[in-house]
Length: 323
Image (cartoon, rainbow, N blue to C red; front, top):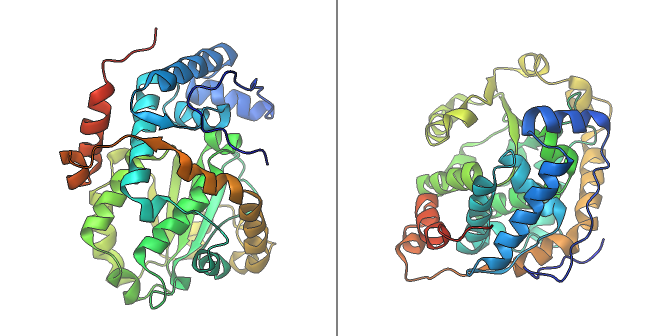
């Protein structure tokens, strides 16, 4: 894969062409108000805005990257630029969560190898990528909460440039059947709150459905707390199933690992996805070069909440507009 250009104002930009099947083009028009003219104009405005931004020092400006934000925000330039500022900021404020997304890191690779988290080979009938997790496979005696979040960041970042997913979105399936009390013990409420803020306000990922199955009773209070800090929009996309039969009424079982009713064994699914991560490694590691200036003496750094990040960084640039 070509090296990423982190210059925020390059001399020229690579020409973009929409090469997806018609069903994605129609979905983009219907759901995102996207057409060739709107997309071209939005990319132009977004790039001019980044080039003029006094706090952004280095940033990707290629079309697949910027379209993450434009499509998530249905081509609202103010909303997309605000999300980019938050995205760049949280990457620097929480480096132990969002930096060094390297599949060659022995610990991260070991977590992926267990089958804890991976994307399934086939998309669903709506073109959505399915991300599968076996929560009980996470070894809490060996790995930390920060490493867990970094694995999720690695998987998410590897998928975000896929334009099919930018348009159709993602489905998450989480099997909690072997979840242990130790999994709950590695979390603090502050971490959960900050992470929820990051996920729903700063990550350009169209999460369409989140399916939890076989959640043990001891995790009910934690799940209630997580739901309490999510927006109503995301709450309505969370489904809790008592058993696999309930899950299979919502998710096509043929798309799941063989152990859950599909055709491809879980080990093979993991191996395929790991090869995908290896191929994307250089681009994922290069993301750490992106930089937005943050004053560590400011209140929004000390508070480490998304609202404070927005007030501090975005407020300083609210009046700067693109003609």
